[in-house]
Length: 76
Image (cartoon, rainbow, N blue to C red; front, side):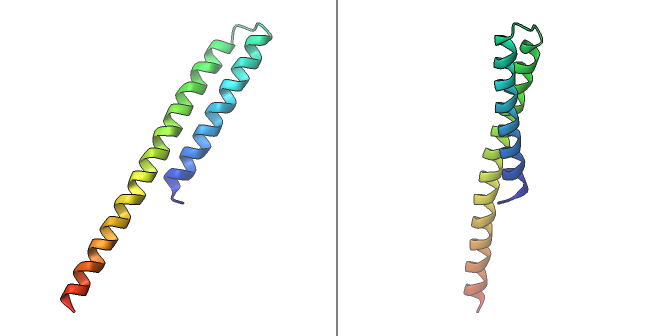
């Protein structure tokens, strides 16, 4: 697991936690819940995009390594 996947998972979980906190605050009828939910959605989105980026990066790295191995086999 690369650092982008780890950061993405942390961001996604943190975003979900903020959204749940916003729902809790909405039940208590505090007006600050709107800002907490907005922050939660933004953090969740960044975390989700970071997970996608990490997966794409992982696949790209594997294909580059496979290509290098194939090139080295041809030279021998």
